[in-house]
Image 1 (cartoon, rainbow, N blue to C red):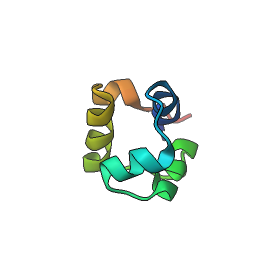
Image 2: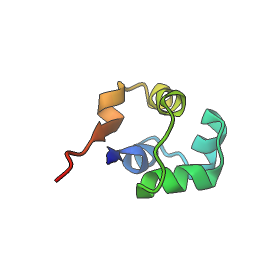
Image 3: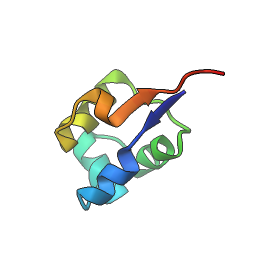
Image 4: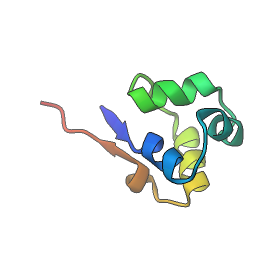
Length: 67
């Protein structure tokens, strides 16, 4: 499973789901699903999100070890 810090980063950067979605070219529902862990982003979307926050991929997304 892929985990992410998108929700906390949005709060830190004072971005709504809608604003982030517009900046990276997806719907608000996609961002909401991503934050809840119901959606695994494409590599392109992941890179766009990281670029918005000026962070490396591993600072935003990480793979949780399967049990």
